[in-house]
Image (cartoon, rainbow over all chains, first blue to last red; front, side):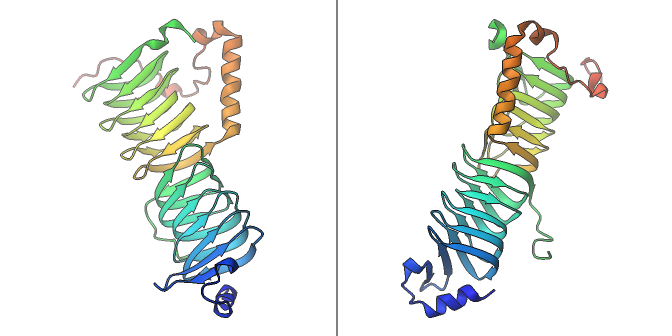
Length: 139
Length: 151
């Protein structure tokens, strides 16, 4: 599950094109761009962003924010602090802080969130659980 | 649809309705409401309101507390002070930051098509609109007459 980290170590820090960058403030970030595809289980200390036509599948448990851009497709179990969706997402989702569905968002799946914001135009089908987080890290 | 659709029913903060309500027009609730409500127009649930009922309307705005299923044929807006506990069925849903929602959400084009179909069916048979506005009245328990409550 640290394969992404390994990639980050071998790549130059400023290689934005590779989609992996380490910032000076210590927050790590993975960015998947058009044509990028990630499949598997990722436990990551940082932020993950899927942009453009990027695709991701599997299980993502991250400490930072998860972002799905317009046009991106994600089929996964997602756990993150702030989750922002503007693309297509299918799967269970947990936002320890806030889930935001943008106007182009399409979400299918059950969500557990502390706060939820839905913009006009977004599409959502699933169950919403808000508030308590007693079992967020248990499963 | 009909000329009396412009009617507006307002329930103030000290008002209470327990039972079943169907109105051709808009509804604005600031008080207590229990049972089942359906409006052909817009439904406004203000901050002061406590609603324990299934709510159906065209455009539903919730800034207060709603406990029950909510259906809107056009859209549902949950304001930052709004809270819904119950299943939601709407073509469009807007939820402001701070709003609270617990339940199943069904929305999107599929739901919109369903509402369009229902509207078309109603338009095709206008006689039935007044006769059977609540064809699915399976909740016989909510049949109590809305008589004034004695203390």
